[in-house]
Amino acid sequence: MARTLNIIGPGRVGRTLGALLQRAQLCAVQDVLSAEVATAESAVAFIGAGRVVRKMGDLHAADVWLLTPPDTAIAPVAAALAATGRVHRNDTVFHCSGAQPSGVLEPLAKLGAHIASVHPLKSFADPAAAVTTFAGTHCAAEGDPISLALLTPWFEQLGAQVAVIDPAGKTLYHAASVLVCNDLTALMEAGLRAYAGAGLSRAAAQTMMEPLVRETLDNVFALGTTRALTGPVARGDADVVARQLAALNALDTRIADAYRALSQLALDLAQAQGGASAEALAAVAKALKNSNKNNML
Image 1 (cartoon, rainbow, N blue to C red):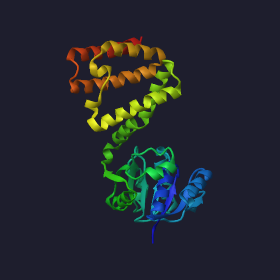
Image 2 (cartoon, rainbow, N blue to C red):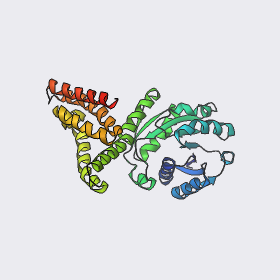
Image 3 (cartoon, one colour):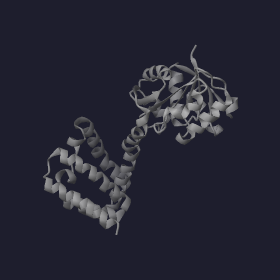
Image 4 (cartoon, rainbow, N blue to C red):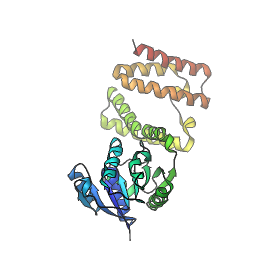
């Protein structure tokens, strides 16, 4: 008989995983609880199984519990769930936050439950699409050995690649994920706004930048960041850097600040690359420093 699964906080991640686990017959989705009844109803419809529960006291006992509320709500939800007495010894309870360690589930561990976190390195903007593209997703997991012994094979059967990480480094791990995912999106928006400042429509700018962005990412993964770097910093062209910073400062100082910070990191890559002289790179560093001073006046 399949293990039963209760889901609390069935947002985009919770409903995606619920649907995947249910369809793979790894478990049977049982109760689905959300602060908003409509959210639970839509999750049950999406998953194709389970029943809507309106309050925590109405939850049935389950073998496995998936907690996917907003990150800051995981600890309060865990404490509230522990107080209901619905979680029993040897149950498995896990969350999917990249920012929170499994330790936030400690109130449930004190009841004898096995706790873990499994964070999929994936964008869940569209659950319907995420269900079809989940295979191949890398997941960072940490928790007690018994919970991981159950969850790791589950996720691997869904096509995921699971790596166990040290919870002590989880904040930096998640910050890295935010940089390369969420902040990359913000960087694309910064580029679109700069293109708009140059007179291009948003549609034209997106069409223009797409092959450039895709080729750059391909180069990063094929060659590594040092060899993939091109542009004025890599060439040591301090005059171009200074003029671009001045133009960006006039457009939006936040975008200029992003350009400056990223160019300072690009300097490290340019130095390792060795294509520009030390004098040229020193001039770039000076241009970046001077523009920062001017921006503070």
